[in-house]
Length: 325
Image (cartoon, rainbow, N blue to C red; front, side, top):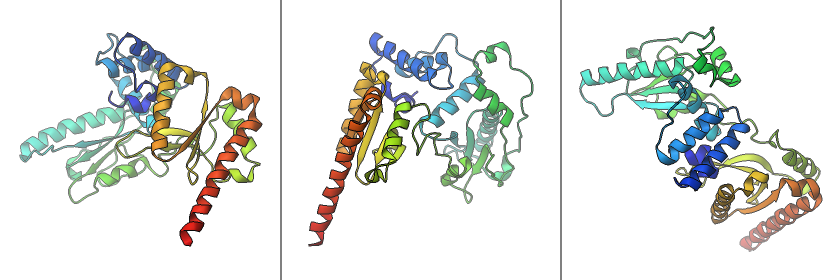
């Protein structure tokens, strides 16, 4: 719930009043239309995040676990979510640690069996964690599950999850142990595997955006456009959620944003302005163009971007020249 600005950044400024809830529902529904998530699931989650009120007809718990794991992963540009759990929580008594360990391991197994996040256990010796391997689902879910299940869910079930043997963590491991003398918290990054942070469209124009494709085709023949990077994640610091930048020249600190009609919505418009201000405070210039502008006046857009990028390079070159004097 506290991650609302990450998975639905346009609603980060929404308030829990009638107008704010209506805007959040609308934005969540628009997100569902463009993604593989259920519309009801996202709208209910947005209302819960703003008000703390749960739906009277929530989906089954296994569906919520699976959908939430996927949503958190995608919000941060990751392939999967890893849940880090401290088994001891500062408990010094072996009996209490053992009882808590058994409960936590049971919960971790349930999450893995039901397509939830991968789980790493802190403070548990590897030889004290039982080995469990979830069975691959072969039968259809009940009617309650089928109403929430997407094609991506079916793919997750067919892939299956696994709980690797203690101390043998392969790329497919879903439950691991990081205890004293063993792997620390840094091992969590290893669970997801190399390149896990790569989004589907990172480094290239979004496949669903004709405007981004047209702009890339025009930039590809311009020598000055070298160094551009499409769809990159950016955050001001480690305490702020990442944002996705449509097009970036990192050396020139130039950001180009391409806006569809949904950016005219008041909540989305305000979120864009707040993000632009933060980027400017961080030293970036932000150039915004609408899809319509790129479609009907592509040459002028490319010229304006080129004018800024070349000017910034000249400024850098002159600064370096004066610095050497």
